[in-house]
Image (cartoon, rainbow, N blue to C red; front, side):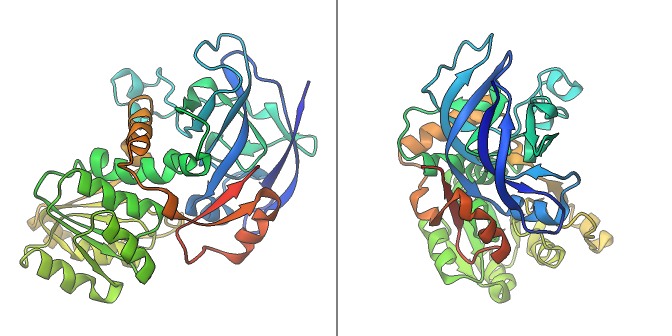
Length: 357
């Protein structure tokens, strides 16, 4: 029997999403139905309104909830299990997975698109998740068990903000002890990049953001220096004795900020691009100086994490108090009010939490 689920759907690119009712099939073999408890409104959801390749599209990709039903051949999850959603569960069979590079999986596990319906037609779900919905239907391997059902709003952030931020520092860049780093953008992801650099024992961590509140949060997470965008170049030069940073992380998605981040790098430095730029955006840089200084630029999706190892690790760190998350949630809205949050555009705060309770 189909399951009715209220949700938020982008019907047309560039237009505010709408609130309505979806129909989800019962879980098939290897699938689970999750009753959502909380989700985070990430900048990726907002940029999807601008950049979506396919519509209609159920928005949302960062969430946590309780398993409602399980399909056949699901052995490690039962109804009532609290879970965190992983939006990129590796398939295990593509060339990247077969050579052990699951972080580069080209075909993440998903459920057939026709198993979720909107107004009688199949609907795509953002990043295979679409968790701005009372219920979600996902592969069982996309549901990572949580130790308990408490603080699910915080737990939901581990599925993207924490995974991407910590992963960018610890996996993509592999920040080394004693190194120097600068992070452009101290939102939910950027603050976790700062924390990742601190956990990696970087000696200099400069957090750059126009918001005084965000800079204070960055200091709380281990930034040794903070700066406004106008102060960034001088702040990095002073903090590194003029050498420049070993790592620069751009978490804004704006080419001008990427260029500024590139300008803070020292010899052999690496620029890590995390922010979702517009699909037609271009980045220009001086190749001769870049070559002479032996620098590099790398992209970062989902923090290059290995989900089945890293997400449980990050959950344990959160449970142990190593990852603060409560202060990242600066407002909570009910699901039916979420379209208004999109209409207002990106918030000045850190994270909007969506409550399903």
